[in-house]
Image (cartoon, rainbow, N blue to C red; front, top):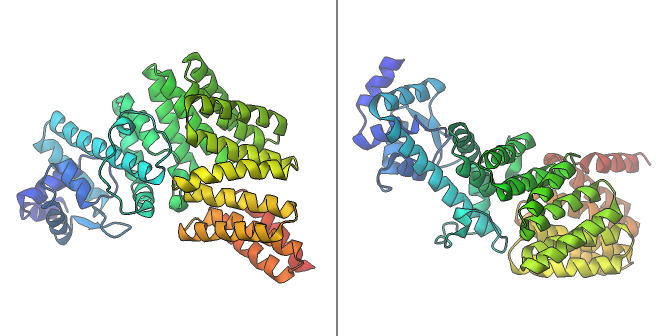
Length: 424
């Protein structure tokens, strides 16, 4: 087999040979011609031809989605890696890895900025002037991040192994909240995302960077909060201590937010209210409008849990205005669903229906199964209020299917409710 691969390799053009060798030295599992051009330092116009040539030679094969390729086998990758080691010095291979890392970071940050134009980011790449528009629309940015997640994770693991600490936590920041995107269920367990932030925290600790340690612990808390894991509170408290020691009010506010969410999940409503109110006040002090909106959304949930639905709606409307203006459709859908539920509790069935249908439309337009599931669950409550048994069951069925498909913790209870209704 190696002899056959050598024969195929010898028939390649110089650009294709170079691409083959250098991609063999990198941790990527799949790649596009753009990544090949950057990593192999060949003209971008030549890269598609080199990739096509390698595919015709049977050295590359199609990846999981259009426009992506991978090595034909593990043996093929080993063959390319051995050629790379025989041809290039350690510094030359290191330069290819550095080019790839820098490009992935730049692209990931650009995608994050397209997805969350009003959300502040941390690190060198977020502080640079915005890149020219690379993604035609928000969906394209989300698709790029979810598709490239495996390469981003693999690159972070390699930077961690190499001791390139700053890049380790900058890559974690560039992947922040990617796990919450609609396409996150593509074979990446939540433990992978926890590991991303754990690597970032460990690197920041070795670099003696308390602000970055706090940022990474916030990320761990956010992942755990989303999956209702109790260790979220401990991560948030550690982040809070580090941020306070660093006298960084922005980080303190962010840590308080995750702590408040953990307390809310644990049903410690009164403490969550105090914690999130502190966070909101700090966000106001540092002028972080995104943070103010997030805190208001959570304070609205608390007010609703306490039966103060007029107060809840005030918080929701404040947050909704911001996320609508700044293009955050997933959060917009969630807040509309929450507002619809509060209107229903107040007996405003028509207003509830308007809000919930708007939430469902936005969720469906963004292929956000989780948000669609929450909207369907709330619409089932509206149908129950109207004594419309058939519509209630239809919405519960859709809610269960969509929430179960993303592993949402609410799915089992909805399934039990639906089963109980069908038995009656």
